[in-house]
Amino acid sequence: MKTYQIIVVGRVQGVGYRAHIHKLANSMNLKGNVRNLSDGNVKIILQGNEAQLKEMKKIILTKAHPFMNVTNTSIAEIPNLKTYNDFNIVY
Image (cartoon, rainbow, N blue to C red):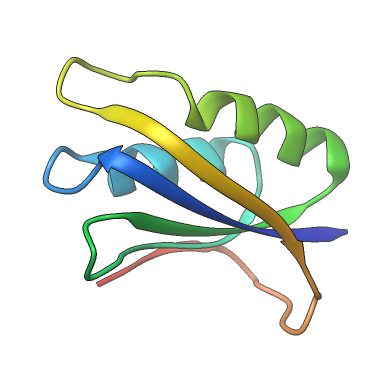
């Protein structure tokens, strides 16, 4: 199991992006969370196997609807300091 932290930059707040990621992560049985950051970006913590994570990273760059617009992502593997039981939206 690996854990990734992904920072998503672009028009990703106020457009349903967190709900979109939540739905996708749950459908792929990934664990972790997604949250808005104060700078307008979105932070995603994903935990799962390498194949699941690779697929999800591709999907994150996909435009789900015209109002979402990812312009940049920062993806880093981080230590497994916590084991997540599910995937949640952090408000």
